[in-house]
Amino acid sequence: MSRNNTLSEIAEYLKGQQLLTLLCHVRPDGDTLGSAFGLAALLRMLGKEVQVLCADSVSPRYRFLSGGEECLLGEGEGALVCIDIASPDMAGSFKELALGADVVIDHHPTNPFYGKLNYVDPSAGATGEIMVALAKELGVMNGEAAAAFYTAIATDTGCFKYGNTTRNTHLAAAKLMEEEFDYVALNKWLFQTKSRAEFEINRKAMETLRYYEGGKIVTMLISWEMQQQTGAGADEMESISALPIQLEGVVAAATFKEQKEGGYKVSLRTNGQLHGGEICAHFGGGGHAMAAGCSMEGPFEKAEGQMASYLSAQWENIQ
Image (cartoon, rainbow, N blue to C red; front, side):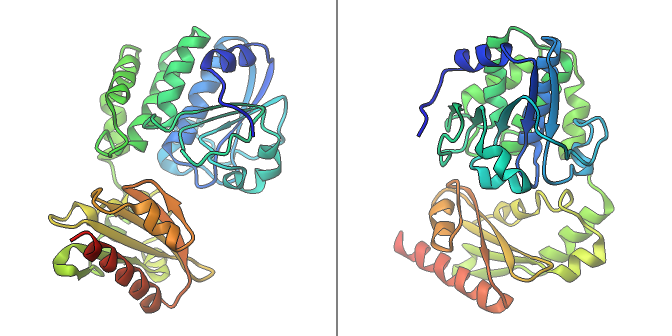
């Protein structure tokens, strides 16, 4: 297992490369994309040739980062940098490429340090937060990179509402706001602009809420039929699992998203009294204390019953 390197060592390695490939994880979110495209902007300022790759398509929400590009497929060339990828498996069809990573930059505590050089900081609210510190080591910054890194930090912290938000997170965001980009318009686009499909899928899903333990435990279903009826894609459903936990008194909320091929992806959110990562690990998944996930086989009534029963038992254990 490789050791954790310093950001100075990472910066010196990047400065010494002319051709680089930056790799994002599957189902790309704002953190992996914002961190990658922000770093790409900085490296290009240093005269480097850079490409960003991802096995999955970029959702409409984040295509401003990719210059409007939806597809980021290609061949890995030059030095390979894995960004916000907790393990090579999370690279999807680029797994074999990730296994040979020259550099890994990440904030997930489960990262096994699979790169030749690694910088993994679980205390960072987002990989984008690490990038702000890396930019200082590289000695460059501009508005394009700042907007990308801000996107990474803001989205992975739920607009600075999640438990992974720290003082350093706010300081990093404040540093970025010194650069020239319209953070007001950016926040509106990221957090206050919703498509009709997103409104409709939210409405239908909220109608499926089930309550247990006097309203402490909640489950919600996003069926495949709902997804087909509304036309909602991954982008429209990205934040839906955060809705039930906003209900007063709820300590844990499990959202079941039915997959086309069968089974369910379960997103678990907690208020911190129960450890979401440990609960999902019981079902073969994992994650953070307040945000975790796992996969469960159908039918829905069986899967939902198993999760609801386990959550109820965990809640009763701490009473």
